[in-house]
Length: 181
Image 1 (cartoon, helix red, strand yellow):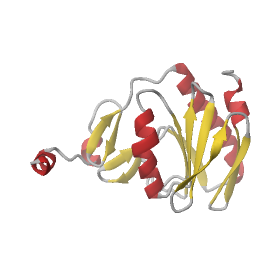
Image 2: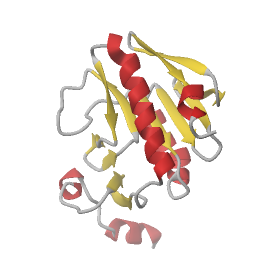
Image 3: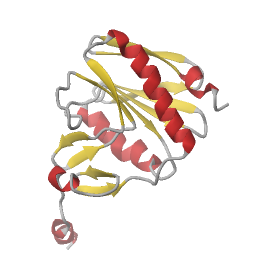
Image 4: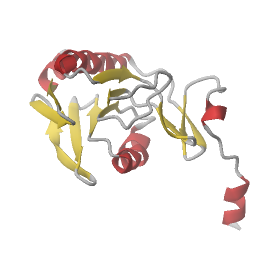
């Protein structure tokens, strides 16, 4: 009986998604509303992450940093990472290639999805680094994909190096979090 109920649910695609008002993600054909506008700290952190990565990527011409851009994984799976580093992606309407690095700034409304559901998708799709930012704790967790995510560590004030596909960037968590301490 449960299978009948699941089969009777609508299964949406990117074509449907493009017509919706508001902020959404589409996960395996199921729409997920984005949380209300993030608090100021969340938005400031996203901007600071973008600025630091953009500066660091000056030597990597094939990669770009994107803010809250749709990643069309497939027709029924569209995610919107807070910050993504994408390399060799010629598509201009959305992210079409697996990002090398994704940063998600957690909020109470999205933490479960970011730490579990999206974690599994990013891992399966081959994202090289997944960085979870905990704004209340002023702490980050980094995972590196080695045929599955492996926790690199937890960072508050440290500087780390992220390497992928011939690119390397330094990221300074001390600088990121200092204005909030």
